[in-house]
Amino acid sequence: MDAAEKLIQNHELSKKEYIELLKGWEKPKVSRKLTEEAVRLRKQYYGDKVYTRGLIEFTNYCKNDCYYCGIRRGNRHAQRYRLSGEEILDCCENGYALGFRTFVLQGGEDPYYTDERMADIVRSIRRDYPDCAITLSIGEKSYESYKLFKEAGADRYLLRHETASEELYRRLHPEEMLLSHRKQCLYDLKALGYQVGAGFMVGSPGQKMEHLAEDLIFLKELQPQMVGIGPFIPHHETRFANEAAGSVGLTLFLLSVIRILLPKVLLPATTALGTMDPLGREKGLAAGANVVMPNLSPVKNRKQYDLYDNKICTGEEAAECRDCLEQRVLSTGYRLVAERGDALL
Ligand code: 5AD
Ligand code: FES
Image (cartoon, rainbow, N blue to C red; front, side, top):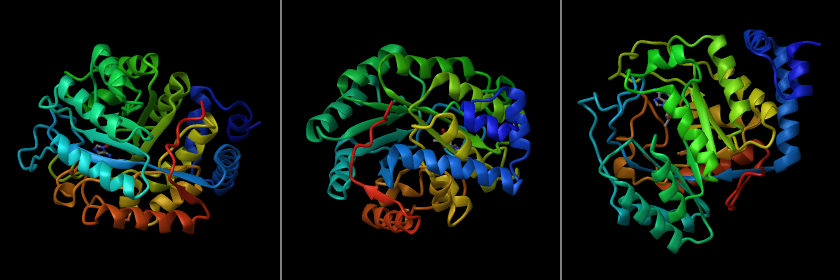
């Protein structure tokens, strides 16, 4: 039995088998077989539904200095902004009217938003929108902080592990950042009852198939409810400015692999995928993704949340972005639904 067959049967592989599988990602016969199985599984669990999350990028201040990221603290040219609690609630109001039932509050690790401030914001959204899910994506915090946010009403947490390889993690981050701590955060979040999202970049500088195999093994072990992946895209104000971007084809292949690995997982077709290829998100949905995340941030700040070059959806109003994505979803034969879209597991 080859690695693809084995993955379909067992929903996991050994490291050696993952590497073999990944090295063959360009073989049309293999990718076709995996895509077919991924689509079969996503339809079995989710039918033709695509869940939508309203993304609110509420601060681009960050105390970290991840080498790949445009809003790392070392980028003196980044124009920084913060949204007030009121501005965040305005985004939610706008989003609710557009049919969003999940709000994702994403930001850099910004000490201005103390635990108490953050909990207040979460409580006010919880109070005004009792039927909506609240997702936080604000980085590494203590168990106690995560507990406070949970009690304030947060349901989900996105924290990409970025890479499960110690070796690659060191190439991508300054030494004060530790993969072990990041992983601990993910386990803490799970223990607290959050629906948890991990994930990684595809094609980050120095990444080998071996590293991606480690990502897949880590995902299987963690059993996250959500997995966010997208191609690495260079940002001109980083040390990786001249590195090659990640491959769309390999990202799509990995989306199918992850769908098979974790059949019920919530898997977004990401903005980075749409940035690398005008039809990237449609292709992502066709490869097994079942979530899209239109931008709800105020248009005046969109361009400032500048993680990588040429990021899409920075000029559109929330309604335009939602409608644009709705058309894109329909073109793939799926439909956008106005539901919370909680994890099935
Ligand atoms: N290219 C692609 N994705 C990036 N991210 C940060 N910088 C880049 C980049 N240059 C991703 C990281 C982070 C998420 C918010 O954005 O994976 O977790
Ligand atoms: Fe945002 Fe098209 S999805 S503008």
